Image 1 (cartoon, rainbow, N blue to C red):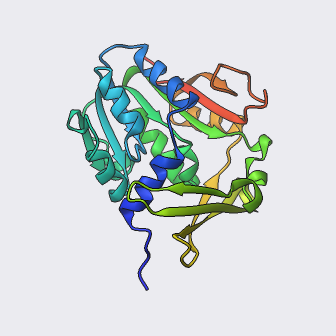
Image 2 (image 1 turned 180 degrees about the horizontal axis):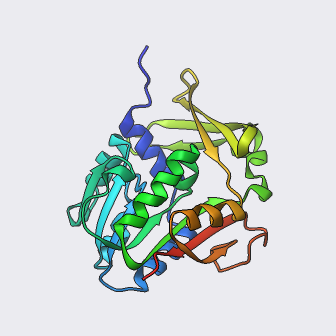
Amino acid sequence: MSSRMTGARLSALYDVENLWAADDDFFLAFVNERPNSRVLDLGCGTGRMTLAVAAEGHAVVGIDPNPHSLAAARGKRGADHVTWIEGTSTQIPEGTFDVAIMTAHVAQAINDDGDWSRTLADVHRALAPGGRLVFDTRDPAAKAWEGWNPPTTRRTHTLPDGSALETWMESVLLPGGLVALTEHRLLDGSIDETESSVLAFRSEDQLRQDLGLAGFEVDHILGGWAGEDVGSGQGELIALARKPR
């Protein structure tokens, strides 16, 4: 039996679950520090941040491996001002960028250490000398996965097509700083459908090491969207790095 959660519905669910918030303000302000920048949005998803960056006058390339997410992005207002590419960091086009961003904890979805190293190396090559990279990931010390359980994550949503959707999550801590995450979805009271993923939780020390090995200089690693220190209780690791001139 085919899934009732089509690619379009999954993209719509993502947009319903992920509204503009403090992290988006942070990333947009970071990009806007350099007007008229050439910006790479790696793991752009359905384009919330990509389109906001383009609307500020920057030249933006959005890359994502999910064709349904890109289809949703291309259907939004202002999408014709963005270059959309299906793929990963290996599809970064020729040329140089002033800024590269990876938002919404997309860095954690790159759970293989080899793929992560290649991603950082690809981004480093794509940046102009002095170009900057910023991304967010969850601090493993905060153990966010302990809250990813049915009682605390159960939500109900109404999708744009009028469908009623109930969602909840379950997680399992795996060896090597990995967490298996399963999202359950009950559409209009139908059979429970699930989607599983594995997320990497890298420590501050590991991020600094990985960025250094890729050739980056680390400017800061913050612990929250208002510039808090790591361990402040926000549960974030926000890495700000640059390619040396």
